[in-house]
Image: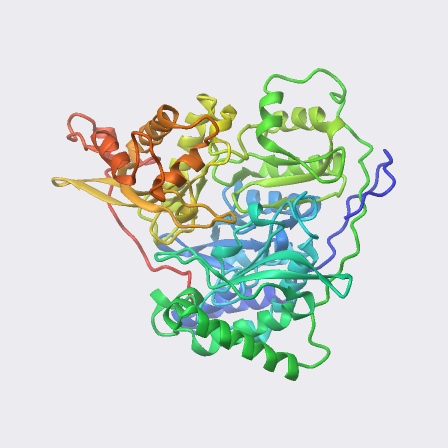
Length: 602
């Protein structure tokens, strides 16, 4: 993007460049639901159809669905916020949920209302098509792409072009399992080694001129068993981006395990085959694709720069004194852009949740404060407003205060990731969603977001081993299960330490099982151990990294050392001594494990 002549002239919000919707899909969905209710569509066929159109099953019922709306590259515009606000109020539970894959979800929608949501989404160019099922899922792109000071070029147009090419594409309708693309700006701001295809923009000098391209990573992914991806080659020219993508997908389509649902993601194929063999297959297949594809089969990448115009209507508070909490918020929620005088502002949510009123308020806030006229979603359940002029930050903070969106800590470990857990998911064993909120509230109360030693660490929580909460790549990660003390059960989490998703991507190492009601004391004890044993320039992330790599020389040298210190904190009391211990967060009934059929695969 380039900075145009900046004025204070008020302009209408920009319109989306791409209309992702097809209104006829709403009619088709409504008719298919009727046939299903009449018994003319069998359960499995309807389930595949429903998932392909982005309607996910809801916990223990077939009468409700979760509608997952795709936001390719994370882009979302004011009119789309307003539409989602109305839909969440009219058809859902008065709120919506931002996922870790740049989707926004509407929960507990009556099945017969899903088609009405599809029809309304089409009015603002949005779709949920292929947000679920065995297809190419939402194509992600770092919310800092285009504004990151470390990027070689903006990968957003390539993410949008890739999403457009594969949406409704016949080659992507019946894959062995879901397939994910992640584009990013640099090593620090993406998860390119933890997806099927991850891409970092690169520039190579060729005969004295610059050539755009990518570093491409294949075969990574999080799940019950997670793998870190492998780099395909030193440099992939941009003209080979589509050929490479098609080649990888073809191989997965041909060789992926369609029988064993537990092992049918591409990462298992890569692991079982071995990287070198898979790499050679991709390079050979790419040569075939390049030689045989029609000249009309290519990515249509629109690199036209967005118009950057500072909005006219700036809050009355602009230029005045800063409200209480502003300095804390500025430090923990904003990032300086490579464009001078501009910042990207990250809005803190609780485990991705946002009310219908807040969705509506964000539409006006974008119009009033974002010089690019849109927002971006990210990898950690939040919303980014970019191109906010530094002179307007106080006014923006004041507006966020009015709508309850001014919490600090968005870019710190005080804002954990938490999947939906038992609030809606069939596979969940614990209420990971509520636990994430409890941690956030407690840590903000303790002002841990202001601690520079903790700023680059992360806490991520999944309600089961399947990693929707990304626990495997967290500094401190948790996945849910059940524990038992005699005949009494309680919510329990397996804790891992040392995961990370930057240039040194690695999976966390298992530490110990922690009861749900002891998670917060255990994390605080780990922080205490860190403070007692850190070197002067350490952060919690770097300290734990040394421990899991057996290179720490303090009194706490290993995972086992941490485990021994923490064990007294996790001993379950009797139910008579502490009945609350045996209740999961958000529940007033005794804990039990109950799951249904998962729908990650169609």
